[in-house]
Length: 84
Image (cartoon, rainbow, N blue to C red; front, side, top):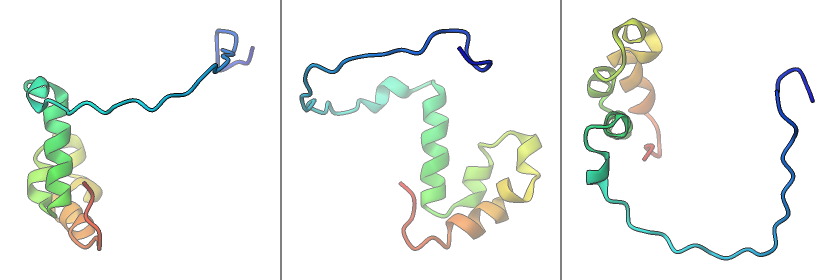
């Protein structure tokens, strides 16, 4: 064991691999959870809307240049391929 862990390493053997069928995500399951805020934050960034994205950041971080409305708009608004 190392100083960073308090357990033995896990060893597993893979017997077979099969492709899983993706299930459509039901977004209403997220209502009222932190996922709603995270999704809205990244949607705003993808749209280059730093004002909206910054409003979802805690006030202590919002005053830093990287998380300010202008900072977020300036960086994410100029991306050739917006995040999604």
